[in-house]
Image 1 (tube, rainbow, N blue to C red):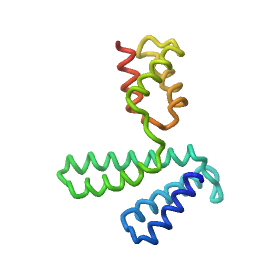
Image 2 (cartoon, rainbow, N blue to C red):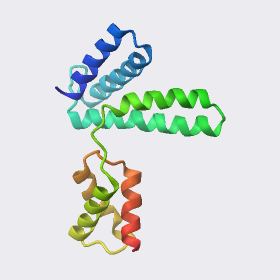
Image 3 (cartoon, rainbow, N blue to C red):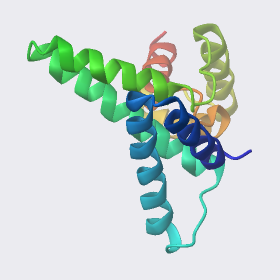
Length: 151
C-alpha cells in the first residue's frame, strides 16, 4: 500500500469514526499531496512514496514552526492543537534514526567522502541525504556533521 493509499484509507476511517481532528489533518495532507502531484506533472500524476514522504515532512515542518511561534506568543491552546496535528502526521513518516545510528552513518560518510573541514560539508550532506532517505531532518544531519568535523 502506497503512502497516498494509506492516507485515503485512514481518511475514510476517520470519517466513519467521526474523528474531526484527524479528518481535518488528513484532508489537508491529501490536498497537499494532490497539489504536489499536479505541480509535478499534471492532474493525473501520482507521487512516489519518497515524494509523498517529502510532502508529509513539509507539513510536519510547518506544524513545528507554528508550535514554536504560538509558544513564543503565549498561545498555549493553539500550540497544543498543532502538537496534536503533528502526532497524526508523524504516523506517516518513516521511523526516525536513533542518535547513535545517525552518528555512525555520519562518521562513515565523512570517511567515504574524505572530508576534513567545514568547507567540504556540502559533499558530506549530499551523500548523507541519499543514505538517510528522510529518516532524519536536514537540521539534525547538519548539526551532527558539524560536530564530527570540528572534533
